[in-house]
Image (tube, rainbow, N blue to C red):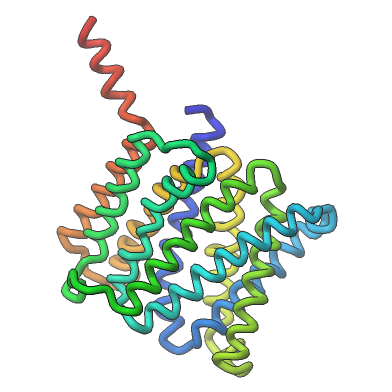
Length: 298
């Protein structure tokens, strides 16, 4: 593993930590805020903040970067919109598990688009990550049975999250990731703003007690996280990205225990361990075992 690949993967761990922290903020805020208006505010703030910092890069952007950023933005909007609607018809724990299906979708999307089969370590790691997330999210409200409307919508959102990761991997290699981020945020903001105005009304865009959490999500969960993801994916694969980002569920669980006082069960601990094993297998390809075996043979 070269240094750029290592730094990229470590950066994605920070992204997962940032997104894990947003669970606590969103859970508290959505108890008194309309979701589409809140999401619109989050991405408007993110666009303004990142655009103001890197306005020179934005002015120097070309049509290809604008088009690519727009595609990524549409993917992100669709994933988040469908996820939000799906939550109306299914439980949060069940949705968390079904959304995580993107972990196993990504390697096969990469296979289809690039005609490059992921190695067995990546596939094993993706499956283990999904199993681990299952342990983290299964509780008394999770039952295996026929999929309802919310479950089907959530599976569709997982496909768009996978598409979002793969599209970043496809475009970020040859384009300016900061520009991709700004355009992505802008397109997502516009689409959520229109959705909020149509479905919720203008009075729900800016509500009391939503500005501070929206700023946190805009700065930490959006500007920082998505921009770092865009940069990191210049140097690592989409499959690695999906597996490492599955740590989001681990960090979200741990922070929920320490900040919200939620209970950590044995299943949750097991889920964390399984996800970490999946990441270790993907990242190291068990080279440390092979090296030990070679030394023992001598």
